[in-house]
Amino acid sequence: MTEAVARHWRRFWFEPDHALNLAVARIIVATHALWHLLSRDYAAMAQIPDLWTTVPSMQRWRYLIVIDASGLEPSLQLLAGVALVGAIAGIYPRVSCFVAGVLLYHLAPLETVFWGQQQPTGRGMTLAAPLLIILAASRSADTMRLWPRDSGESLVSWEYGWPRKLMWVLVAQIYLFAFISKMVMTGPTWAAPDHMRRWFIAFNVSDWWRFHELGLWIADRPTLCLAFGVTALAFEASFIAAVFSRRARYVLVPMAALFSLGTAVTLNVHVGEGWLVLLFVNWWWLAHRPSRNATY
Figure 1 (cartoon, rainbow, N blue to C red):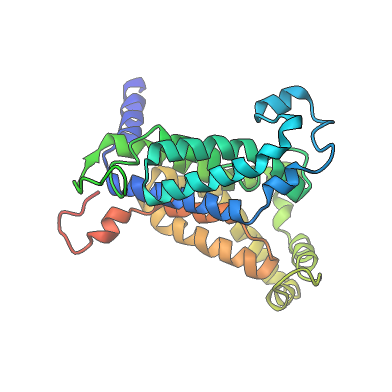
Figure 2: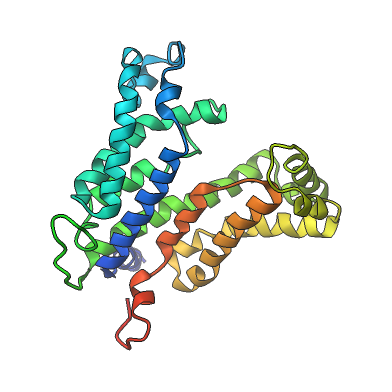
């Protein structure tokens, strides 16, 4: 039993993968992080008077925050953007990913100002920082890079597999923890028609929201409300299977894209991290489908 578990463990983490998949993962993660960075003005948030005075010193040091250094934030934000562009373009990708990951980790707590939360988790940069550090520690720069020049070699190795698998685990926890949170706070009745109806109404009646008609139309139909609630719970609970099963990925990855689109047009909720499911796509296989040797 123990030997079988160890064998499956090794096969999971050390399964060969293609360098192209990891390089594309680098571009996806850096592009997603850059989109977040450009859609916020973290430097302006950092200069709010007395922003950090009530935050315990241990929390401040944890995120590399110095109260009297808010004037440095514009430069740090600019440097983070430059590093992300370097990661996307493939200019010293490992260094670029590491610098961007550390700086985004520092900027992440400012998401609490934007969202009015108590903790710097669950939004924006929650995944960007660790994903970039994983890429910096892996061989994500072996192809699709500008400088140093790409050798153009077609590489397959276990060293390209484990970083993607680790990133898959981090992305899957978005949905798994969302399901657990619903079960802990509300229970299975979260999917009840009345409960879903309140959600659809609450997120469609304000003039702040972009979409209105579809969500309110669903709210008037209890059967559809129940169907949406049950589908959401089933999807969030099962997405973890995409980490371990290729067949599950064929179903759950497209569902994740539809899930993100559906929440946007019916609830006006944009789950930006949801687009990181693109990390599950086998880009090398897509690029070489006509070839009989496209097995990775």
